[in-house]
Length: 47
Image 1: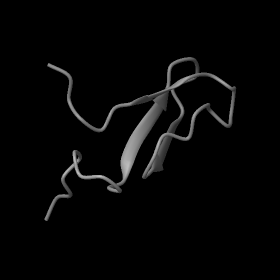
Image 2 (image 1 turned 135 degrees about the vertical axis):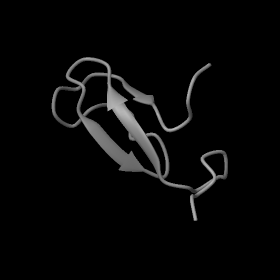
Image 3 (image 1 turned 180 degrees about the vertical axis):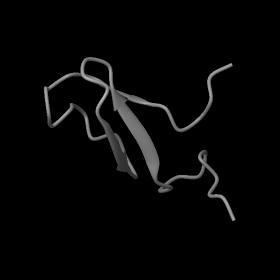
Image 4 (image 1 turned 30 degrees about the horizontal axis):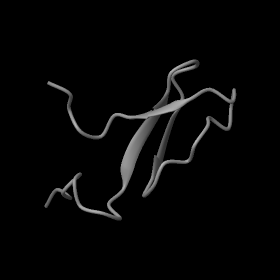
């Protein structure tokens, strides 16, 4: 069963806009731990 990406507390995937590193978290980690770049939530498809 897939988790609902819109549900609060569900695990999301964030990708760094600078180095493309990815991290899974239940809330925004803020900045990339590898390079300090901004992270973008890529869990929900953008249409």
